[in-house]
Length: 432
Length: 190
Image (cartoon, each protein chain N blue to C red):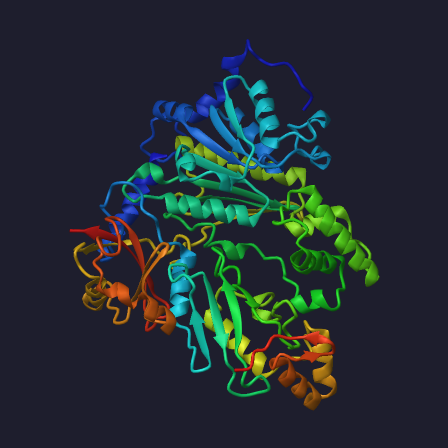
C-alpha cells in the first residue's frame, strides 16, 4: 500500500459498484427490501470499531471503503515498532503515537467523505450512554477479558421496550493461522459468554510449582507476576501496559530463571505471559476482517442474510492446512450468566413489607419458592442463609418496600432459594 | 437492521405463548440491574453448608462479594484453633475463582507465611461449575489432611514428611503463638 493518488475526480465511480450491492436485491436478499432506504440508513449510521491493531487496521480500511461514513474507534495502545509488519496504517515515524489517532487520520485522508473519531482510552472508560449512540459494534480485540466486558455491557444495555437498544456485536478474532468471525445480537442470539467454551483458556500453573520448582520460563514470569509482585509491591497497582512495570517483572523473572538454570525469559515473553498476548498473522487478520466487514454491510443494509440471522452465527476459519471454513449456529445457553436470565415483571404494592414480598413468592405460580433470598444490586434485602447474613438482614423484613427499603419502580431484584439449587430468578418490580 | 427487531418480536411472541413473561412495561430511567456474578454468589451463599465448625462474617451485608470465613476444626492436628480467611469475589465470578487468603500467620505446608493458600480448585482446577461450598470444603480438608507433596511452605512440608509426631508438636506450639524454626506465628488457639 504505497501512498498513491487520491481520487477526487472519480469519487462517484468509487462507490458505483457498492451502490449496486446496496440498492438492488440479489437472489438471497430477504424480502421486503428497499434499497434506497437501506443505503440512506447506512449513510446516517454510527459504527464503533474496538481495537486499532492488526484486525482494527483492516476493519477501518474495509468499513470506510464499504461506505460507512461515521466511524468511531477505541484503542488504548500506542504504536510499537513490531506492529509495522501487519498494521499497515502505521509508519515508522508513527512509533509511540496512539494507534486510534494515527489509524483514523490515515483512513480519513485516503477515503474522502468518511469521518473517523479516535478515542485513545480503554473501553471500560466509557459508560452505557457512550455505547448507546452506535448502531453497530465491531471488535478486533486480542483479549478475552475486553471481549467479555463489551459483551456484558451490550447485553445489559438491552431494554426490551426499545428496539434501538439492541446493538449487534460483530466479533473477529485471530490466533496464528486460525480465526473466527461471529455476530451477536444481544439477548436474541447466543452471546459471547455462552460461547466462552470456544476459547481454550490458558492452563494455569499450580501455585506450588511457581513457589517451589519452576520448570519453564513462563513459570518464572508467573512467579514474578503472582508472588514477587504481591510481596514487594514496587508500584501500588500493576499496570500491564506500563513498560516500567513489565521491566520490573522481567528482571525479577530473569533472576529467578538464573537461579534455577532456566533459559528463555525475555522482555517480550514477559509481556506475552502477563498480558496473555495471542500471536498474529497478517493474512489471517485480513481474511477475518473482511468477513466481519461483510457482516457489517449486510446487517446495515439487509442486502443479504447475515450471521445471526436467520440461523448460523459463528464462522470459524483455519488456514493451518490449506483453507477451511465452517459456519454453524452456536446455541444460546439458558443458564448463561450474562444473557441467560432476563428479568420478569413482578407486580407488587410499594407499601408491602419485605416479609409480605418474601411470603408472596411461595404462592406465585411463576416462582413457587418457599425460602427465597432476595437482593437488589448493591443492597442485600433478605438472605435465608448463611446464618450471620440472615441475622444481619432480618430487620429488613419489617420494612416497607418503597419507603423503608428505598426500592423504586422498575428496579431489578435477584431471587434464589436453597431448595432449588439450579434456579435463580431476576424480577423487575412494578409498583401498583 | 430492521430485521433484527422484527425477529426479536417474533421470539417474544413465542415466549409469551409459552407462559413466560419476557419484557417489562416499566419505562422511565434505567435501573440498576442485578449482575450475573452477584446472583450466582447469592445462590452459592444460600447453599453453603457450614456445619458447626464454620461461620461467616459480612463486614458490609450489602456487599456479598467480600466476607470472612472462620474455621474451627473439631478433629485433626489443627483441632482447637480458629482460622479465618478473607474471600474476595470478582465480577468475573464464576469464571474466575474467588480470591482466598488466610488472615493469620500459621504453620501449615499448604499455606505460606503471607496467607496464600495452595488449593488446586482455587487456581488451576477451578471450574465455573464449582461453587463456594466446594471451596470451603477444600479449606476444611486442608486442616484435616495437610498435604506435604504439594507445599507452599517448604519447611513445614519437610517437617511433616520427616517426622509426623514432631510436626504435630510444632503445629501445637505455632497455634499457641510460639515459633517454629525461628519463625514466630500468630496465636490461633481458642
